[in-house]
Amino acid sequence: DAGIAFSIDPHLVRGLDYYTRTIFEIVSSLLGPQATICAGGRYDDLAEELGGPSIPAIGFAIGVDRLLVALKKEHRELHPQYSSVIHIATLDQEGLTAGYSLARILRGQGIRTRVNFSLKSLSAQLKIADKRRARWVMIVGGKEVEEGKFILRDMESGHQEKIGWDEAKDLDRRLNGNG
Image 1 (cartoon, rainbow, N blue to C red):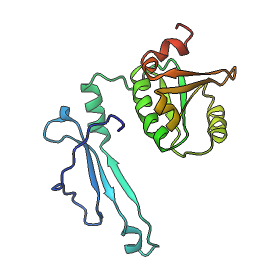
Image 2 (cartoon, rainbow, N blue to C red):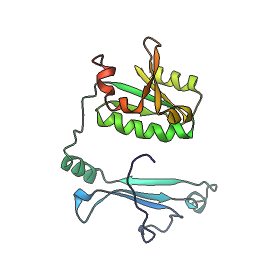
Image 3 (cartoon, rainbow, N blue to C red):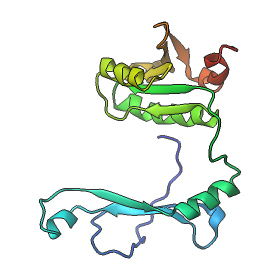
Image 4 (cartoon, helix red, strand yellow):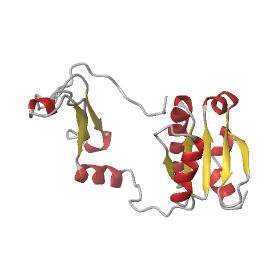
């Protein structure tokens, strides 16, 4: 559970007949009757129908104007000043799920956060973080989830330590040397 609320509506219909199985909409309660910000679905047969190979696919479209209106109504800054950059390296599926939750917590503090979705080796993920010049890497896997902790690595010094999830809520001060 990544902490994102959703509901399943078996009666949802989209206007295009090339969807297969799953369709979805992302809506905002702030927009009134035209609440859909993003919509899409699976197109498993589309490539083949157009003469290509059979390729399962998913696609979506975002209403940028509606998204901007919703962000403005939520009083969200469009260009926040991030105080830190952190890369979340995930070691397995449990770590990936936990990484989404950690990213939400960090972004809520204004910390620019990247989550690695590939589940590559830790060494490969650290190289990616270094290439992107991330000062901090948060390492999380099933073992860390079980312990209720994650590993915070300072890419500059190489120092790393285990930190509890409860400390993630106040990580901004720690990353900036004030905690």
